[in-house]
Length: 110
Image (cartoon, rainbow, N blue to C red; front, side, top):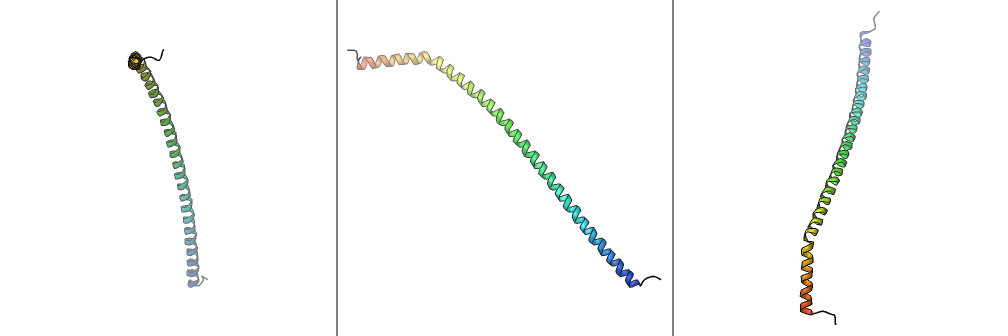
């Protein structure tokens, strides 16, 4: 003979509550796992971006160093050329200054 209908309803309610409780626990577990996986993916992405940015920065710094060396060498050559092109003028002016000083103040030779 079937059980009392009230008992069956009570048992069904208990089972339903347990199913709901199990489903909520499983949902919370799945959500926590998904959040952890998302955080790991985000962390990996940040690390890759940082590494990529660092590599790009180093590459640009090396390129800038090479360019600055070229610019410095070009400046040295231009300065040397300027010195050489004006050396005769400098020597002539130095001779003129020496002659002017000697003519105004005389020589210390005796």
